[in-house]
Structures are given as C-alpha cells and as structure tokens.
Image (cartoon, rainbow, N blue to C red; front, side):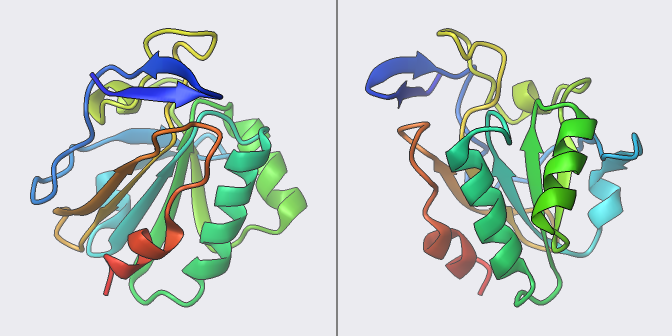
Length: 165
C-alpha cells in the first residue's frame, strides 16, 4: 500500500507501482469510441502512462495538456492517459482541448487500477486512480515510475520524459 496525500490528508492506494525492470501487465482500456485498447495495440512503442483521478480537475487537465504537447516530439512513443472517467467525458475533453498526440483511455470497466496498484482505497476519492506516471520501453519493461505524493501536484514531466532517452 502506498500512502499519498490529498491537500495534506493521508490517502492510501491498493499497493505500489510496478518496479523498474519489471514487465507491465496487459490491460483492456476503452477509448472514446468504446473500442478496447490492450497492450498489443501499442506493441513495439515506448509508453508513458499518465494516470490520474479525473480529467475534470485542473491538475489532471494540465498533465494531459503537458504530455500532449511533449508527445509530438517523441519518436516511437505513445502517451496513454488513464482515468476512471467515462470514455465520453474523456473524448469531450480531448476534442475541446485539441489533444491529438495522446491516447486517452478509460478504466471504467477494467482491472487496470488494481493490476497497476493505483486504485485509491479510502477517502472521498475511494475507487478512483491515484496520480502516477509509469514509463516503459518498447519491450514493456518499466524504466521509470512516479507515484505523485500529493494528488493535487503535477508529476515530474522532465524526469518521465528523460527516462525515454
């Protein structure tokens, strides 16, 4: 279990992020067209998982925008935004914001949060995903992780992107 905070109050997750050097688990996440995307969908690409509670909060929206901006310069890399938001809300946000360089996928009917151990287990945010970043190479080996210690804070973009080089 990881202990993080929400505006200074302790919040816990179901476990700990995958360790550097481990191979990530398969997943089945849903895009805004209700299509299922799996690990195989992104085969042979480096992947940045930008995981957050809800796209409709300022910090989550900022992280989606920032990774979208940076993604266009990354070779053979896909940024995958993941939250429990419904696919329709994610699609609406991305369309309104012009986010074309990222995949924004919903965990609303999968076990991603539990498999990647980012599900929040208590507090008013129970059941949502914590703010975390997992970077994997083209062979699905974890090269970087960050469990953001304060949910209201943005992740360390530079460190995550540097792990891809």
